Length: 142
Length: 253
Image 1 (cartoon, rainbow over the protein chains, first blue to last red):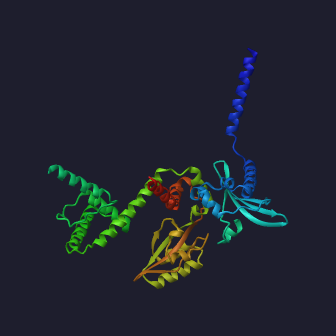
Image 2 (cartoon, rainbow over the protein chains, first blue to last red):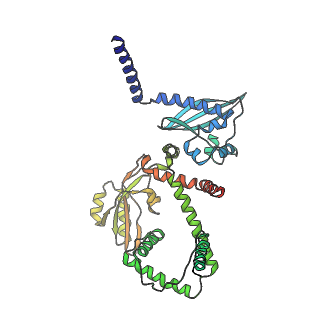
Image 3 (tube, chains in turn orange, cyan):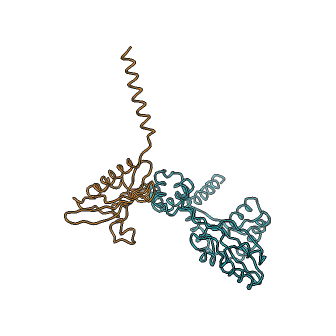
C-alpha cells in the first residue's frame, strides 16, 4: 500500500513539475542564452555546412529563396574562422543586433548580425555576400 | 447521314476545346436588353478603374452606351483578326495569372514565415504622426495675412479669433503622410499651437490653418492587422517561382 502511495506521489510530482515548466515564461536571460547558442551554431555551420546554416535563416527568406538560390547568394566563411559576440542590442523585444568580431588567424574584422525571435526561436537574417554591398545596411551586415 | 452529322458536330466541338480560350465577338442585336449581371459587372469595372460608385440606373446607361458604340465598331469591320488575337492573348495571360494566384492562395503561408517578415520589416509598420487643424476662412487676403501674423506673435489665439470673426472649421485628426503640399511641408515635427501662412483657395476665399494638436504615436501596427498585407506581398514575391513549379508539373504530365 505504502509503495503504491509513494508511486502515485512520484508521478504527481513529475506531472506537476512538467506543468509548472510549461507555464514558466521565458526570461530575457533565457532568450539571450538561446541567442548566443544559435549565433555560435550558425557561424560554425557557415564555415562547414551551408545546408545546416540555411536552417538558421529567417523563415520568410527561406520561403522566398530555396537552398539552391541561397547557395548562390551566400558564401561559406573560411574554415577556422571564429565568430565572437562583441555587443548585443535589442531595438525591439524580438529583434537583436549583434556586433560580431570575425577572427581568422591574425586577421580580424567587425560586422553586424540581425537576429529575429519568432515563436520561441532566434533566426538569422542573411544578406547576399557574393557581390559587393549595394547599400550601407548590406555593408554592415554582410 | 445522321450519324455522320453527329460525328461532324462532335469533331467541331472537340477541335474548339483544344484552344485555351476561344473568343467569339459579334455585334449585339438587342443592346437595350441589359441583365443584372451586366449592371454588376459595369459597377465593378468603374469602381476598379475609376474608384467611383455607379448607381444601377447609371450603370445600365453606361452598358447601353458602350454597347451602341462598340456595335458600330464591329459593324464597320474595324475589329481586325490581329486585334482579336491580341485580345485572346491578353485574356489567356490574365487567366493564367489568376490560376496561379488561385493555386497560391490555396496553400496557406505558415505563421512563422509571416511573423518573421513582420519583425524584420517592422519599421514599415510604424504608425505615422497625426495632426489636427483648425481652419479659419477669410474673404480677403489682407485680413487673412494680418490674422496669421497676429497668431504667430500671440500667446492667446482666442482673443485674436474674437477680433477677426473668421469662419471656423474644426478638422479631424489626419495622418501627416496623407497631407498634400503645401500643407505637408509647413507642418513642424512634434510641434503644435502655431498657424500656417494663408492659402488661396479660390477668388475671395483664403484659409489660415492652425495646428491645434500633433500626435506622435511611437507604435507599430499589430501583427494581426497587417498579416493579410504581408501574405499578399509574399504571394507576389514568390509568384514567378510558383508559376514555374506549377508549369513544370503540367509539362511533365
